[in-house]
Image 1 (cartoon, rainbow, N blue to C red):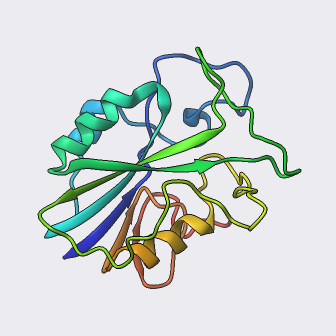
Image 2: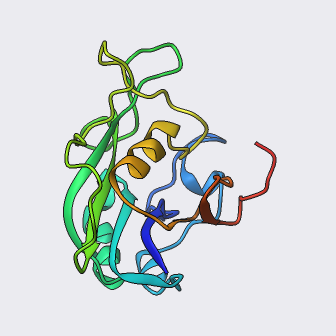
Length: 178
């Protein structure tokens, strides 16, 4: 049974973006809120942590999925993004332009926290620069370092993009060439 689950759901948006590369559905199959709420989960321990990535435009959808999966939101972990050139990210947004991604930290039962000194934002060096953006929806390695330093396993990643040593990685892109 897994004590920690990371999920980066393939959120379905109601809008269509112009261009050949903008929008999640141009990169992988997406799922609706209802489909995600009914998604079959692997065996999860009674005392467990869920780290679920959400998009700013779908806050309530993300909370509905967390609840449907049997977890209670506790806090958030924020990835401050930058470009490959080190500039502040200037992402999409209908109201405000996003420069971060949000990961909901939710629990069920009373999971053990290994470190109570983890901050709520990613900082990858002493000068305050953040983790650079990779391919669409890819999360930085620093995120997984934080997870393993803060929470005990066994670890499972849903909607994984690649295999990770010591983790059960479940996703339709696991094993594809990077």
